[in-house]
Image (tube, rainbow, N blue to C red):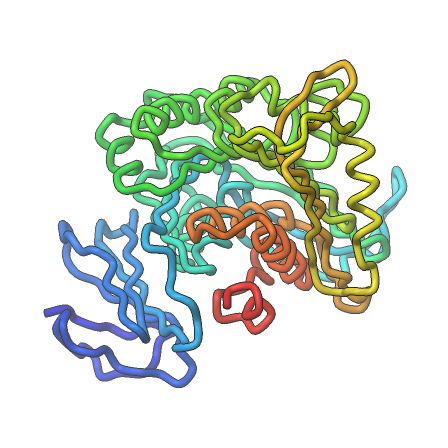
Length: 437
């Protein structure tokens, strides 16, 4: 028997209420999250029926196994069979100060609003993945301070398993000051890393094995690179696919990319890393230099994204095509009158980049949603939400033609609220229905 205790966000029930694992749980018209707790240790596999799922995670604070209970609409597609994803990287606190316009040097201005919430690339991406229905786990490090405890509590509330997060008894948790410019709808981040930093010896072999157990995917945001490399090597040994984020040039990132099956990059990264003359040429260079990569995506903000997918089959035509010319041809096929994200793609082609080489694959051009200016609030975390959606898409075996518009829609939804997590959609969000059907 499991005991059900109501929480502030739960449906009001008599306390405690019990029901067996085989019986149907109480139904709610609003379907809020409920939390079930049992003394540790307790082994429990995710149990899903047509109308509900249990999502387990372990609380660091009380050493209990908790199960998040969520109602699912009957019309939703089934969740991925294996939806465990492990992320390694940053989790911190964001202090978001919105201002009328970005200040000039030596200015004194006032905020129009102030928000404090969890942040960090890995923390944000895994929160997005959890809201979409995956079961994420996080390897990171925080201090046992007020901020660190808040970081863990917020992640746990969204269903992220933090049992592999290292908590230092001394030091400081990471945090970021973010200036949100209401005029230009841009954000400026000033990051302070946590101390002491995470090192491989912080992660025991037992914790590493437990974190990777049953994982469908490993996601690395490029931070805490020594620990990330340790996890990536073990994941590669277990044949767990690896997605690496290329936000900017970082120490140790090259070693992570060599083990990657997938890469998602910011707009400036491909050319900075490859020194290629154009972004399409840089994508070809990445696939040439990293033969294990199956696809690489570069996000371009309001201009959408580009994706180059490697093909294991030779192109039916032997003639090579310049990748920059192919991109221009694909752009002509876009319909700029469509507001929702779309995608156009080439057939399998032998693509050439001058001075780089050739690769056989498909080039995709994804568009971004045209968010009305009145609805656009903040781009903080847009890239993280895109990655979270791609993690979901890979676990769901979505084809690229569906994955890119889906990820773009999730990112656009995120941008409709201030902060990286405030606007992250759940799988029940009506704006995602057409992509999940």
